[in-house]
Length: 611
Image 1: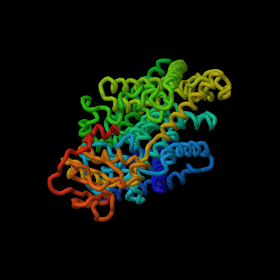
Image 2: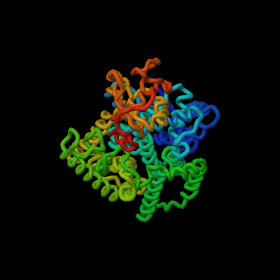
Image 3: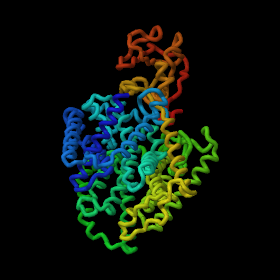
């Protein structure tokens, strides 16, 4: 527990400090956009240094030095003065931390997030272990984006935090930073409404669902897309940003972070968002904006230069990554899914702890899904029309772009990639809904309209929250969407507390024969260990049983037996020790093995789906 929260604190403090210092150097005032900017810089810096001599020690030193320097720089500039109201942000961060802690509280232990839903964390742990040991790995050779893995290795080398706790820490940290980032969109609202809105946007249902799978890359990319859009909006409407030549640099830095965490696919969402934003700006100019943005050429050129310099070192790896198996439309394509995921899950109201289930397959009747989807869809259409009517076109344009990417993935890709497109779009759709909710005074202070040169804030938007039918619909959406996200968090499985690459290392020895795994009872009953072991030993015939059910002899046809026993005593008479692999012992039945093996073939697709 302490190691997980120490990693979370380290990620959040470093990201916020380094990000805010970067904004200050650009002449930009204090903003919660600093969170994703800092996280993007951490990803790039850690990946750039993790392969230097020391195998992560340089990363730890670099991040520590930058964090201390950033804190000192910000303190000297008075950023931590009492003038700033930290209480609402602290409350949002605390609530987000509690929500992200629900899986551990429900399961009763800390460990590998998502084991039981998605076994992919095994590959990330193996890769981080190899990086920390100064070795290459399959993901390194394939050009896989490994910025977050570099952060985990830096935590390991700098603070002595285990790899499992490091990945948990960065995943929890993203869940805390996302609502803080969303606060930028809700300035002017009362503290409670601002906090509730930021939490629903930052921890949208599909974001919470991917968190429940331990999918830190997808939640990080969703944060970067949300932050990228907000950074572009701030650059054109916030008086503290508008006149600064580097005002687009934060968006460029976020794009660099996307490259190091999601490779070239991440740029698809960002490019689509940038095009939508530019189109909205041109449309606003056509509506009579006093500026046609010719002065934006220099700031945009500076931003492109920053992006090019930051992303160039990863160009070769991005080219290599295009052959990654996930992008093959003729491959299995399902991953750990059961089929295509409903697009209505992206609207936030989906009362299921497992987003992969069809309506009615869980404990909630199917009618609840349909009612929630209809209500959220009606609010989305209202939000779209209301935003267009007040000529606030950026969010509707970006939402259309996100839907277009999803449709392209749905029609030309796989269910696995289509589901990721929905997850990344979810915060944007939630943001559009919440900023335009009926009776929700987002524009009560006129700030969202004055950047157009006129006060377009809707009259009557200052009515009390929940005081009429419109306000009740706003309250209902926030409550329903928040409940669904909490449901997803609470349903997250938590796997083993530790990790060793040695079990995967046994695969070449046992692939051609059948293997019986005698695992500790706690691992199987409390830590979702059966699916974890099946994934680690995928590709062979494997039986998995509790060690206290070993019986007097291994099943017929089984050549190998794997145990966790620390001693040298074989679990069955006649077995010989083939390999001592750390916490695992591999035993072999000598001579010819008679009988037909009862162990099933653990194919890669089956292991991913947990079948």
